[in-house]
Amino acid sequence: MSIDEKYLSELFTKKSHRQNFAIVFVTQNLFERKIKVARQNAQYIIIMRSPNSVLSVRNIGVQLFPRKLDYFLDAYRQATNKPFGYLVIDMHASSDPGLRLRTSIFKEDEEKIIFIPKNRA
Image (cartoon, rainbow, N blue to C red; front, side, top):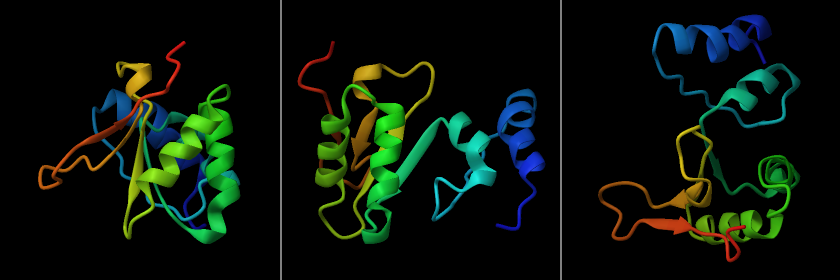
């Protein structure tokens, strides 16, 4: 990865909050060491199906949904079972924790899909 780790960390922590701007960061390796701070401070993560990233998807599920891994993996499978399918992980502080996983979020999508855990405890 050619981006400076310190600069990326500063963008995702200080600069984006103080200067009130959004960052869209695209990567094929969510667990690259240099982007740890960026990953931990991301408000939205969008993941797509990739046969070589099954372990990464599971790892993000373990980190973000430690007691609801099956719920996360089921939502991921359903959201990505069609070509170009994606799962939006909403980690924004003001979001309802029960509504963190979504797909088909665009206006032209026939129905919006929200994955709700069976047990919202």
